[in-house]
Every structure is written in C-alpha cells, then in structure tokens.
Image (tube, rainbow, N blue to C red; front, top):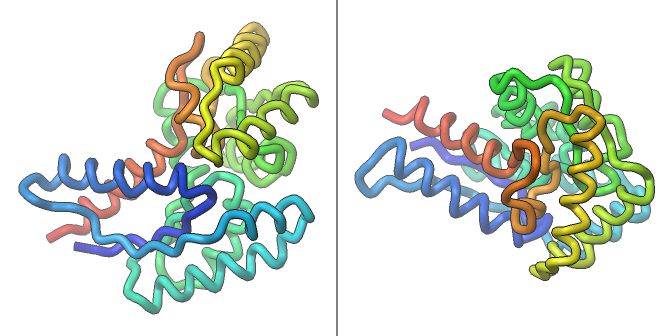
Length: 231
C-alpha cells in the first residue's frame, strides 16, 4: 500500500472529511479490511488564516513546501493539499518534492469536462474567487468558462466560510443566500456550481444546477492513486 501525505487543517472541519472519504473509497476499491495509509500534517488554521488575510503568500508557500518535504522524508508517495485556496502554492510545492502532487484543480476540471460542461460558477474564499491561480487552470488548461459572483456576493461567501463553516457553524439563512447566488449564475448560463472551498459541501448538498464537490472529487483522485499502485 502506498502512502498519501496530506497537508491539512485548513480547516480541520474539511480535513476530517478527507480522512473519512479516502478511507471509505479505498475500502470500496480494495475490499476486505483495507484502509488508506495516510501521513497528515495539520496546521493551526488561525496562523494560516492571518497570513492569508495579510497577503503573506510567500511565507505560506514556504510553510507548505516545508511540510511537503517533511511528508516525503517520512515516506509519503504523493502529496495532497486538503484545501482549494492553498493550491495557490501548488507550483512551489510540486517543485519542492520528488513525488507527485495530486492537484484539486485538475481533478475538478476533469470532472467538469467528463460531464460535458464548459461553463461553471466558482464559489470559494475570496482568494480562490479573485486570484488567478484557480480560474486560470480551469480556463487555460481545460477551456472551461468560469463565472464569478458579484463583488458583494463574493464577500458574503467568504464571510460564511471563515465566520461560520470553518467553525462548524451551519445556518439556514446562509444556505439560502448561497442558493440565491447559484440561481443568479444559472440564469447567466452556468451549467454547474464548483464548490471551490472544501467546507462548502457541509452547507450545500443540492442546488438548481449540478454540484461539483471538489472535496469528494479530490478524494476520489487520491483513492484512485492508491488503488492503481496497490499490489
């Protein structure tokens, strides 16, 4: 069994889902009493969130590359960053190790293309929605048109993520607010909504258009890696 090195804790609310889903998928694929071999580096998210807020991306990338190198040294056969936003550092992490990085954006884009879609709404933290690293991967590498919420809607989504979901708080009003944002995008031609924050599936499990659950899709890609190399 190969070993997955997960960089998580951003937040732990979604990282726990990674652990659960990856193990469930590995058990389904391999049968018996099989489960996943996982090395987990889990951060104090308060530290990470403050660095994000202050746009300290170079420092954040140094933290993630150090973690990736540590996981490789500890025996990881591939790396997975258990969050969408911090894939802003994915190119640096990938260069820093000699093992594969399973990129959440690639997994997401392949799922969109597989379902014959080419226009999606992207929801996530304000960093994921406004910075180019995620949109560019979908658009430039996979020819997917990305719709973003209006500026005020982006701030509302960001607040829901950081002030509620990362703390395990689920509010009906927030769910309604997100559903309205999704409806607006559907009226503009969005064929699906990308839940580009791994906490969002805790709030949104259905919508007026198909949901692209990046957490689940990422876990499936990781489990496929394990199953493919298992002997």
